[in-house]
Image (cartoon, rainbow, N blue to C red):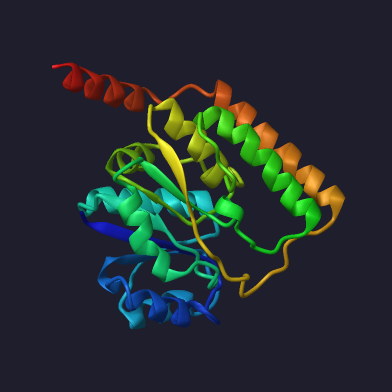
Length: 247
């Protein structure tokens, strides 16, 4: 199986060299693509110098658009699976092998900070919101999820084919709505416990007000996902796949 590690990045020059160096210990950088999402610093040039492949957006389009670009890149270059890996040092390369192995049992595997009693530190308000979102998304996925907003995940061959055609670009759609889209296509989702580092930059919001607004936006995204029609090309691909299985 050819596995592409996709690193969506925006102005990560301070840490991207270290992130790629740690990745190179477990995965060849020739199979790593950094999607430079409109950075105004040296993120792209540092990644190229390290040996990673780089695709650049002229302007900042968001993580969803960056991952959509990565899935298209994967399909065009013959990759079977795509791992989303943050450029801020939060994700640990040693978990990559476990994510790949878990594809034997699912189309999408999410690295969960909270599965099996994970102890990732988060504010009470933020954790409460994450639990609520996980419960709602679990109903869509028809499996118990504890970390639906985790950006550390792997998509197998069937998921790559779907996401290369259409990937949600709304804020947090890349994590939450993509799960709903996948399950509507008959794909299976599961979790794998992982340990994550604290973010190298930025501070998560701890206010109850912001947590409430965050929840409302997620519910809006899920509402859109539940009524949004599946793109015709995805419907056609799914019907063709079902006919092939029946034959």
